[in-house]
Image (cartoon, rainbow, N blue to C red):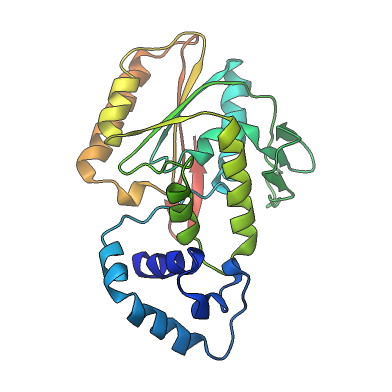
Length: 263
């Protein structure tokens, strides 16, 4: 991922035009000279690519918001309270703006109907019924990451673009739309260990809101000590929770061959 992301960045920055002709993300299409052009680009920029292998892989897939949205709706519906959203492993914080996207299952809707990020018909009825969506009010959004990305900068946006597969044009379009939403909706992502950050944020109950600690496709990257610290922080905060200051743990993480959603 680091290697291919480094090469993709060269293409996106216009510094590998021969290879760009094969990359849909740069307006190209794979052709018979792809292998040769790829190897030539790697040879020309080998030193820079090797330097980039030390970078951490960063993706901020807003498609995960479509999976998490029913969980948020469930918390809001059960508590009747606005939400305080705390995301760990938040990357650039694009999923912290989840309530400013539009969701339509065909049976229920949620979010901003004018949003450029739209999920329509993205769910399948596997026999348990389509997920229920509903009105949700987010009054606080904050996140942490070991290496946060500033999506307000071209450097940050290029990093996230580079780690998309170059043939996933629809995913790139969704990412660009999420950048536009982020410009209008502020969210802070702190550089911090997730266990320590969560412990500090959960040290005291916040009355009048439902606090939701959330993460998606993060767990496998987290050191055991940080996982344990997070679990401890959640257990301690849960023991202090009240009906006026409830706590939820929402996560989408790998479970065998697929990821599942747990609340």
